[in-house]
Length: 252
Image (cartoon, rainbow, N blue to C red; front, side):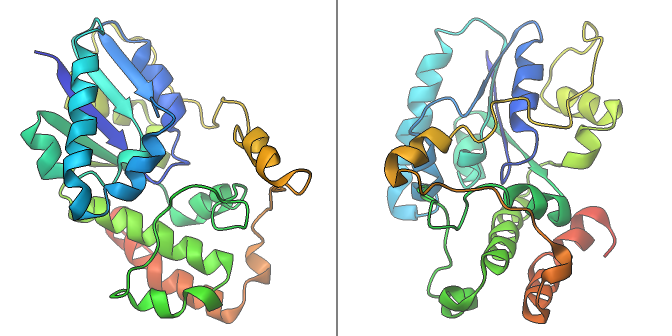
């Protein structure tokens, strides 16, 4: 029987590097964001009325496994982070999460078009029952990203799935070994457990698509300057991000 494993996160967590690493292991077939329309699942998997479509998507994935040679079928896919863990378990999948410290995550994602006018993805937004919905139109991009970070990672933490720290995965061989062991992958023939710290893929692969949509008015990467944050932005960081720091990292 093929082992079916989903590794997911908010993104900006070395997922492409991890996929390349896993795919180089004998007997493992691993994909990173396998299909272009995977992004749709980020949206519909948040809404229970689309659970049938989500299940059909996973069923199709399982039919594709039959064509892939290997004892392990692995998807490293941030777009699947909201897929219900009970649904996955019922279909024989194992779900694993990766969480990155909010400080470096926010610095990294700030250089992407998320929550700018150039953002063309179906990302998550606060529902009517979320107090953030009343503040959303008044919030800065930084505040929206703090909410986004907390919303996604709290979902993973509350799902009861194994969680790995990004920082340990890219710095400690022992953590990579622990991850592979959890995936039931034989590590006796794996000689190198180092993951690159930086994404080796082409930087900002969506730039061409954005240019097609917006012409020369395309997104220009920004750097997050912590020194210029307002008191309200600092308070939002404290409210949304620090509880996760305490839970995952054990300190503030």
